Length: 333
Image (cartoon, rainbow, N blue to C red):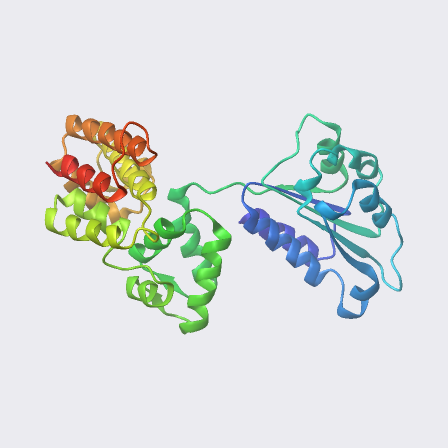
């Protein structure tokens, strides 16, 4: 986040690089930086003649260089934005000669999503010297809830831990997808709202009572009735509750529980830090650890691996519903 703020601050202050090479697995911040440059480097009267957007699949390095070498018309700079530049990955190194001697009146923005340049090659070294390279790394799942809190806080909203976790478990780690859902919430809810699980259920369509978060909690508590109600709901709504996701999240939970058992220091802050969870959820692990000794946790993880193979059609021809019911029975008994 600080790196993004620094890039934006430099652009605002007129310290604009001739090349911005935006690369990496997480597309959200690549789009944010690219959009900011597109919207703010030139004013509206300058954009018509001096701003051009190219797409990797429809252009070539030669065409990009040719456009970048032109001079701006009635403006100090021109902006060339290359979107989906990863489609040029086989020829991207041809950009090296331009990167070594870029046109200073051009701002060339290259959006190189889901890939990154080899640091050992000339292009990376040339751009690092003459321009800016930003690598957007994928967040780990246990970092996304904090990211949601930071984004909402910056917009004058708060979010309860359960609501943030529901979003992570339903939407995964795709920040663009999560940001779209947050934008919807912020259009509906007034500033200063503390977003809770009911807001998520009413406006995004994730059930506050029947989701993987609640299943994990019910399993940890050994609440057999609640766990069975949830998996029955899952069986009736398989598209919104894919088995592979349920198995993955349960596996993460029991892997964390195994780590919990191995901790010498079980203070709340140490547990939260070691397991990568919010302190808000730590009590659930203390309860689950009493219900599942270390040996049982190891057995459950083996059972989850077996269910994962079955869900992919390996060694069994059971329905997804039967696999889930069998899995839950083995975990809880």
